[in-house]
Length: 237
Image (cartoon, rainbow, N blue to C red):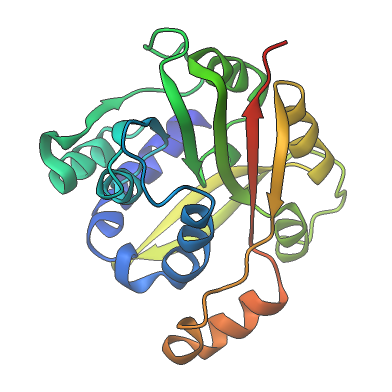
């Protein structure tokens, strides 16, 4: 599956670089505003890891708030797109989150991971590494597909199972298969609290501007969750 994820996102990198920032309301008017609302406006003196940076939107947004940013992604094409976006303002690496992170203990104040972890089967090793590289009282903020949404849309037979799902995305005129894991809510929460102290669980609402830009998307997202966000703090046990 990992190879398929890499191939899919290598293909998607052109769309992420050129169209997602303008044409994907689920990102621009839903997930991104909700995630950024959980962070301070001024991030000067913060070391932040963007874990699963894609084409670098979050990397750029965090830099604009004054943070020192390191970004990683499993797709080399996404890494190259992110570098084109921010130049040498951030340290951007191609790296697999399921492998040991190439950073010293207690390097980062914050780890942000946007819509990435549902491509990973086992979160225990990932969260172990996240905890290692976070400073004491450091923050983990991540978003994933909402399990109830995927359960409904894909007509899963058993909500409580962890399963691989395949979606068809049309981006920049190309149809691309994207595979990911759906897991029940209790597993998302338990995996988190096994390593961190839960701070917030966020089921976002679209920002009001979407109502005029895309009324259909606004109505859907106002009534049905698509993503879920978790904010957690490193405990020092």
